[in-house]
Every structure is written in structure tokens, then in C-alpha cells.
Image 1 (cartoon, rainbow, N blue to C red):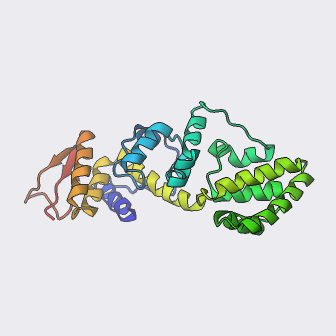
Image 2: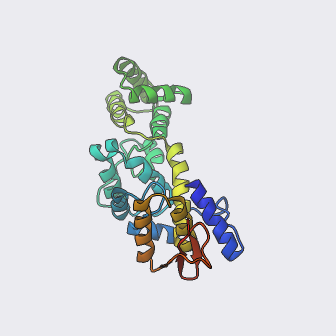
Image 3: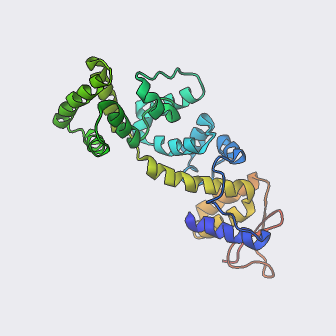
Length: 266
């Protein structure tokens, strides 16, 4: 995909005399999210499957933080446990968001009170249980591996720390059990954010430079007939022409032209 992004950028430079500097791009460009919300995400990194198309229509991501969440939630665990549905319902105001403890609001507000990331597990354990960040990471790993004996010991320590911060012991144990339940589903946010950046860049290109983007994408998949058919159908849906190969104009790869894309001789 990085090759596709660079290939598209080279075509943009060739046709428009400028390069897109994604470091300086605003990752919350409304036009890009308008596209993603339609579910017409064919060609976009990580979100082009039919399941992802449906999810984007339902969730309607409106900022970069929510793209990160989409990539973290579209997995069997969060989907089967109801986390994904909770996230969608809460985002659209159809389900009440309740923060059992005030300290959790700051940590879980970006994900509507749902524990989506491993980093959130660590933050809760640190903020409420009083553990160091290093200890919080060890607990997070132990939760993921379901190390029951270790967790029993740590639940007591977590409750001790929480009591010092004004929580009732029973509430603290209940919270620890809740975190433990979701820890196994938690995804690494930094990993998801890196993927989301690439998702955003492909979406940006599809919105503002569709001919260049799909030329680069088609060229990268030119040996896969099924993909070529899928992408050509999407290009046609976007009202761009697919021009037949020309011995006078075509190069080896697909080339963006005024109003459409020229088939490559390769």
C-alpha cells in the first residue's frame, strides 16, 4: 500500500506539478470522512472488505480517532462480545454512556466508555490501582494470557490502591474484574494508529485524486484479474472513464488521463 501511495503521489506530481505532503495534512478533513461514511471504501487500506464497508456505514467515523477504533474493533473478540455494537450505539447517542468511576472518564471518553485498547487497560490500572506503568503493562499481559493465580494477587493490590483513592473495596474488585474481562479483547492502539494513517492517506487520494490513486492501485494489482475487475467497477461507479489501451498513448502501467484512466499495455 505504501508503494501505491507513493506511485499515486508521483502521478499527482507529474500531472499537477505538486506532491502531497501527508505529514502536513490535516487528518480530520471532512470530505475524507464523508466518503468513508458512505461505505464506498473499495481500494482503501484495511477497510475495503464487504464487512468493513457495512461497518463504516453503521459507525460513520467522523474523525481520525474513530478510524483507529474501527481497525481495532473489527475483530472476532470485540464483535462477538458486543463491544463493537456498544461503541456504535453510544457514538450515535442511542445508548447511555456511564463512567462507573470519574477517573475512567478521561481514559475512556474517546471510545465512548468502551475499553478498546491495551493502553487503556494500562492507564486504568495505573490511575486507579496506583501501579507504575511498568507494572501496569505486566498486569495487562497477564490478563491477556488469563493467568488466574497472578490476577487474584493483583486484584487485591489493585483494591488496596483504589481504596487509598477513595473507592470502596467491593467497587474496586468489581472494576478489576470488568477490566480483566475486556483486556483479552484489547488491541494495541499504537499499531492501530499506524494502520489508520495509511487508511486515511488512501482515502484522501481517493477523494481528491481518484484517477491517480486508481491508476497506481490498478498497476500494483495488474496480475490479479479479480482485483482489476473489482477496481474497474469502482472506477466506473465514480463516473471515471476506463479508456482502452493505445499503442500511441499507453505506457506499461495504467495512466491517469483527463476524465479517466488509460489501460496499460502491461
